[in-house]
Image (cartoon, rainbow, N blue to C red; front, side, top):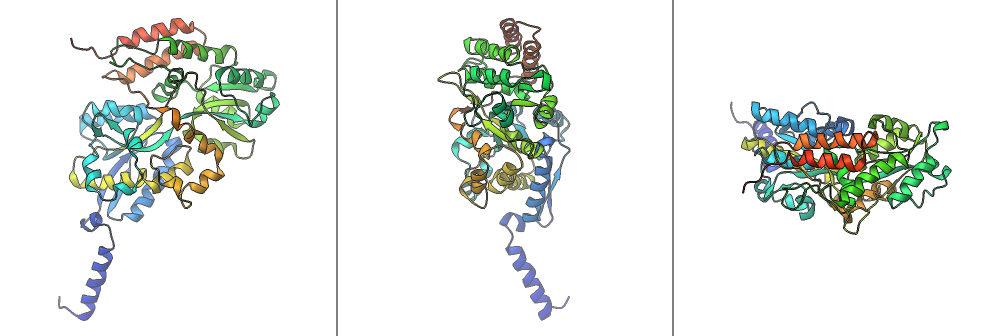
Length: 430
């Protein structure tokens, strides 16, 4: 081809366009495709699809292929553990905070520290040391926080007021909360008082009850079950009191959601992650207000829920592309989309400081501030050690069900639960 003034100008224009792209994108002659998997489609499907579209628009040399979502954190863990055996892992996956340990014990996640250290923009993303710690197992940065949550209580302000409560002064302890539930409960009008979702993935709601009473799941050595100690005894008795005194029914979470959204239930304990869903489903049917989770001990805490973005890719180029996606999804841009679509807190400090992101949003949506106001009592979402981690969470749920159904005495159920979990812990040498 002969060089003419026209071809030279066209080549120069193409080069100028390429130079406007990030260094990583300029280095790629063909798009790099990465696969991404997530769970909880009821909360994240639309958000993940929007995040992928926005990311690809800003990064045309990276193609994101979203795998079919799994229903929950347990399901995606089981899926990816199978994928590790068949060498079909996704390049990026979003896992529950409490499931990082199970993956790290099998050397599946990539340590993100080298990628972070090599990227000059990492410091601009608002990943504070405390927020980064939520994605660490041992010395490795196994993940970056994507969406963080705490347990909160949702109240139907109309039903609270009709029962003699004050929507502007919500209960701060279990006694008052259970009394309010009983006052709201009115079977003649098919109005239920409360539902405490003890079934939430990873025993999160059970941990909240135990931690808020100053307890822990295991002792410091992780050799002995500790949730049957005095704080756990108080916790399981509170769960039974919700049933016997607060009139809580033995129902499925789906039934509770439907009842609350329809205005037939006064109080609901759920993750703040559900706030966006509550807002959409309730609309203007009644006023929704949110309240803090009761802390029953001076050293009481509540578990931080949510998920982290992790990289499983082993290929170097896919790792670099995956890191770009993690930065976008977990950084200020992705976090702004995530908060507005859900009720989670971001794992970056940047959006709350900018009016074009979340500063104005938080000012106009006070219910979203309840979870942020609980940061002073947040602690980690505990992950049981060893190969039986998933089985342990299922076993705990089985025993909690007997407390809610009133088929077992709370103390007897706790004792049996502790004995079974003790037998499922890894055996210590020596």
